[in-house]
Each structure stands twice: as structure tokens, then as C-alpha cells.
Length: 135
Image (cartoon, rainbow, N blue to C red; front, side, top):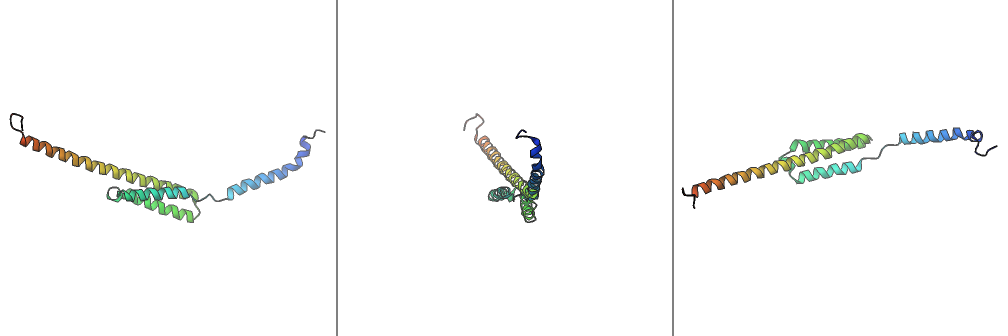
């Protein structure tokens, strides 16, 4: 008889099946890890937004980011790690959106100030110019 015969290996089939079943069961039963990296990224994005004084320009978005970070922390305590990771990611994105909106608003203010200064200088130049075109 061939030493690689399938008849002799059939007695190990129930044992192999039990091992595979236990492995799958253990994989399903384990709780996913807390999304620490996502939480830290959200915290950092919020801190950066606060440092950029986002509250002056994009307060609703920053508030949403804070609320979602708090909800993510609650989800971790409740062992809802997938939900916690999703909320932490949304928090980070909201904080980054708030920062982007604040930077855009600041740039718009600078642009408006520059345009006012240019207009003022042009008016001064026109007043100081003689009809012949010389100063």
C-alpha cells in the first residue's frame, strides 16, 4: 500500500476539521484592537486646528470634530472598535476641513486688505498727479 494513501489520512480528518473550526471561532470571538492611531490622529488634527484659531472662522466644523472624537472614545469604552475607528476618522477629517476653511478665510481677508490698500494708493496717486501726467 502506498504510504500516501488517502485511506490512512481519513482518520485525521475530524481532528483537522475541529482545529480549523476552533481557529475560525477564535478569530471571530476576538475583539478588534482599539483604534489608537486613529484617535491620536484626530486629537492631533483638533489640536492643530485650535492652534490655527479655527474657532474664529470654522467653529461648526471644529465642534463636529470634537463631538465625534468624544463619541469615538465612548465607542472604545463600549468595545465598539469599528464604530470608534470610523468616528475617529470622521473627527480627523472634520478638524482638517475646519483648518482648511479657516486658512481660506484668512487668505480672503488678506486679499481684501491688499485690494483696499491698492485702491487707496491708486486714489492717492491720482490726486497727486498733475493734468500733464507728472508728479
